[in-house]
Structures are given as structure tokens and as C-alpha cells.
Length: 129
Image (cartoon, rainbow, N blue to C red; front, side, top):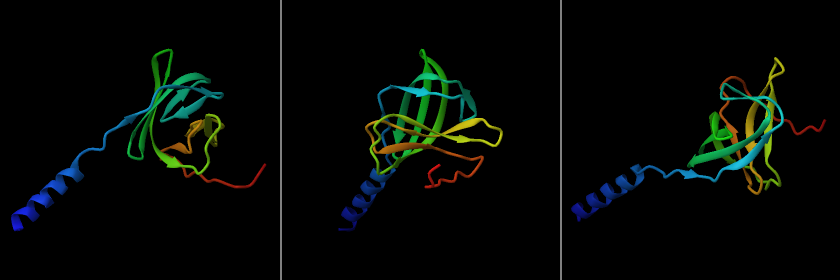
């Protein structure tokens, strides 16, 4: 009996320690209308190939233009409660007037990719302009 229990514990330990497989989503076109900062890289306005790979909730986003790497950033995939009808880029206007990409909302999904922010705290408001 003790041997069976020890074997079961060993199998459970192995199962828990296995890595979560990454899910790579198909590339899609994504438009940025303003120059933005993404993970320290300045990304000019334009249409980019957007790819993202998820490991659980952790998500790595990559932007390419004409097959050339432009920028990548680590973020978190979060449920939004709203299914987006179109792709959206949520920007933060920095004190110097520049813009940082802080969230990508994907059309047809009720999820958003929120980028890790280490330089400032982001405050959201429900007030309408």
C-alpha cells in the first residue's frame, strides 16, 4: 500500500512539473495610428504583422513589418468581459507627450493583452470626456 501511494505521489509530482505548452496564435494585421513606445522600442505608425504566443496567462507579443522584426513585449492575457468588434490599441500619454502601448484588444475575442508596466502606475477612469 505504501509503495502504491509513493508511486502515485511521484506521478503527481511529475505531472505538475511538466511545462505548459505554448500556444502560438496566427499572425494578423494590426494598425498603429501613432508612434508608440513598446518595451523601450519606438514603433512608428503603420500596419504590422502581429503575433502572440501564450504560456498560460503570460503572453509575448511580436510586431513585424514586411517580415522584419520591429518590437516585442511581455504581457498578460486578461478576460475583458466584452467581445471586441475590432482590433484596438490602448495608449498611455506620457508626461513628455509621447505615447506608450499598454494594451492590445483583439477583434472577436473577449480578451486583451495588457503589457507589463514598470515605469508608472496606470489609472483607469469610467468618466466620459
